[in-house]
Length: 301
Image (tube, rainbow, N blue to C red; front, side, top):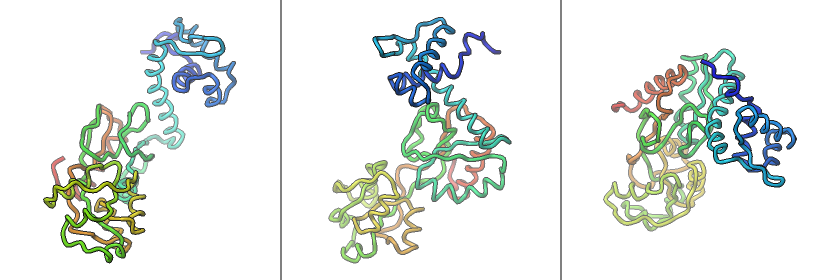
């Protein structure tokens, strides 16, 4: 049921209000929306008149949102993002059916993308749009329908599908290994160890799996597996890489195992989505992905 006209303000006024809350000045709002400051001021005044509530506190040449207006802006931000997302989907795929997915760069490119042609064949009417994210985010704010997540299934306000465990292998450049004798896991403690920011305890967990309780030495840190892989290739030290990356690098001869086989980590990979979301595109993608995970890892879901 549609509410009274006064409670359905114009998009231009809502965009101006949301932007002022986020950016802080009318000048920044005018620049972002590619409008004049006077146009922004008129839109905000019209919004105040339509709602019958003062929203703007004017001090000399500056405008500030009232506390109630800031709360209102936070609520409409998610609605504006949803409208933008729906409009983009319609423009990209006018026949209908789209999914916007956040992916982890390495896992998305090396594990998911090679499987996507099968999804495209089975569901040709669904377009999968992807953007990279390294850490959890707010689904309402960032506009993704689902995300590939590494860690534990503790994303607030979300449901999840287990995909596969993470298994880490210690690897280094062949010429680096030729210069160092590694007879047992503890020997790695004397070598430069490369660390990934998103897994701060990875080396300690890996060594503990071999019964080594000593704290691993601090070393250089990297924010993505792409960069830590390059560092290992160039002989900067020993890296712990997921098996789907390490196997390809070792097969190509760019890296070699430093010690042992790939060992399970205490974390895993998941598909996560907002609790209660049941769009047809998400449901089909989730069901298809469950089959992909089941083929590789026959574990309870």
